[in-house]
Length: 434
Length: 186
Image 1: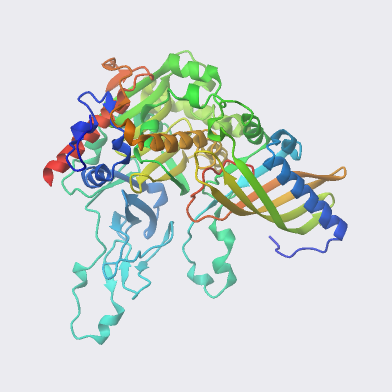
Image 2: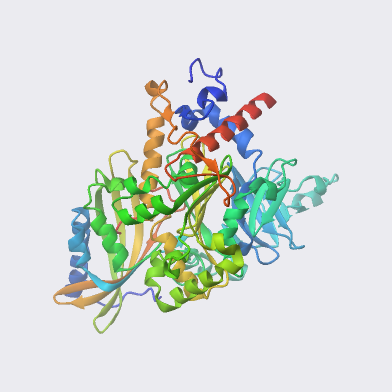
């Protein structure tokens, strides 16, 4: 594994051939981090927001692509535009609000002003000057690719990246099991909860990508053993492409509707009363028609889309792990609810997320603790010759007759091996480009 | 919400403060079950999310422009509060603390709460609307130290010689949440 002085390593020194051994430096090394910024965050499709946040011309939300602050806005032509939130004159952010509706973004320093699409429209001081700059050249730096699928908006700094649909590939089959379950899709509720963790960005990602196996152990003060037994008995872990993964329970065909229906097992469903439960049963009754009989029986757990988007189906939250240097994460999470649900039902269902997840969540406080501690452990220099063991279930995943991708039991850590193989190859490609 | 305190007698003020001081002591001493006994069973416990809002041009030059309320995504908002809980969730939090596998607090946090600026805003029958401020110092092995600060907007019900907590909204002061957890009992 990793030896030699700084600067002489190759990504293959960090992650071995089958990714069953992974160096601690993957999470801690500043050079690894710098390569990630270029090789992953500079190239991949990155999640920016949801169209439910951008209904009207001028609506905008803040986002990040890696460490780069971005404004995602609905333009006057109702198109989606993403621009870097930094004035082309002196670099200040031109937008300070988390979300809102604007006609212009104005830099505080000299009042250069921009349209929501990012075009420069005014330089106040130019009127006193003889030479006027060409404003067409001085707009906010545009994110070259922005695309939306089922209302999920992504951006990429790589103008030549493959189409978003192809990037998501078979993950669409699994995402649709949730997104298409509701007659009008989903809606994001408000600004994301954003909090800082002293950990590396890949730790929340790996947890959400497929690690449902820790539930029985880390969360045993909260999650009853029977719930975990159900996950083990009915659970599937799927990798549709390296870095993309889904875990879910496939409920028996004769399971009662209350056991299959999304949302019933959360506190919002349990405590929400007749109105909420009737809504959830009604949605489940339409499920076979909307997503087909197989996906109607799916009861999702966690999903991941490479590199840093997570979807927690069971608790209805989308999450993005934004890197802030090797040792810090700015973690964003949104509660999501069915767009067609009555307002009172949406409010009840958002507690399926907030009771257990988010910065105050009963379960996530335990996850956050282990991410911080794993990051600390990864900094132990004298253990560099003892890479982490990622070999559980090595080679046990198989194709499946009905489920796209490679499929296995949830205890198989192949989702993480596939992630790190792609990660290693992306870093290697970025290194060769230099 | 009216922000003017109503006149209180010294005895009434002392009774309110005594309730809060005891509550803080129980929480700092990790006597969470005794703390639960201070709650009404229909309690609503809320922690709104705090967002960076766009200035509303129509409100410029007015106090309303800077209103704290505009920053809160609370119970009645179309956003998502950080916490919206009842007796069940608070019981889960309290009871979880006594399990040996509650790893997020193992070893347990050492906390110290200072409660002040206790003001009675209204009294109707046995119901008291009270606001108070708090600082909460937090230290735990393996975790960065933290100082929490916030305002609590409470509804108290007179009960026997003291009070019971019927509703609490915790307005936390943060720009970015650089705190170990917002899952504490504030």
